[in-house]
Amino acid sequence: MGFDREAFFAKAIAEARDEHGDVAPPWARYPEIPARSIGWRMGYGESWAEVWHEWLSRSPTDRAWRLDYLQRHAPAPRTWTATVMWALVPEFRLREALSDALPAELEAAGVIGDDVGLAAWERLYGASPPAAWASREEAPAHAVRYGTREFDFWARWCAKRRADGGLTRWLATVPPAPEPWRAVREAVESGTPVEPPSSHVYERAGVLLAAHGALPAPWALGEEAGSLREKFDEHDSYADAWSLWVRHRFDDAKTWNEYLQAQPHHPKAWAKAVTRLSRW
Image (cartoon, rainbow, N blue to C red):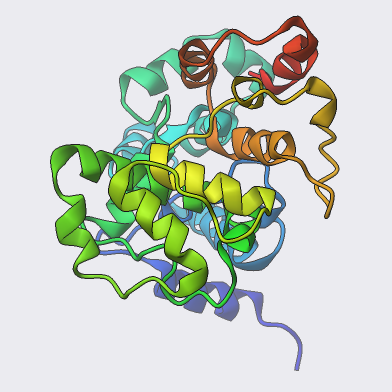
């Protein structure tokens, strides 16, 4: 028996529909996967994207209907702008669309914006997200290295709750942190980085993220520009961990520039790397 495409997508769409009958946009369903990530070409991200594209191709093409649909879900980061334009106007031509008023219209309608990934993550988890150490067998270094964006969302959420007084209550509801996560747990609660159990750069990055909700720039910690290799292997430096975090954290120029302005001005030796990372 051959593959029954119609039956496959009918079942997948039925399972994916939410309370509105929608299949949520990829950026709203899995905000921890950055736009253009390989995560949309393999695994659960690829599966969701395929079902979403199929559902949307079967949905009304009326512009008002599609705008209502987009507004029911979390706004998309600017890195998703071309996809959002296609979702609203399936027949659009990218070059023409980018030169007209459509991006501004999308922003005014609240369906794209700056630094909106965290808001999408918060909509999924509400007031009780899982702790970073919940159901994890791996060490913090692995979580930061391979789940960078999700760890960042969690650390930022904790920083916000620490500021509004809700963090202590939340910590009382989650499982105790296993020993490898002790430094992360203490940093989250206190807002002060503590010495991690190992010297692994990604474990150090995890403690700093847990404490501050952001990573200090490597030049602020005295690292030389030559330490940035970006090969992402066992010889990674803190600068490499920071570079990976930057690529996963920032979706728009405004938020990236605000981050840079909050850091000490980078030395001349770092200018090339900063320019390369300023990809918007």
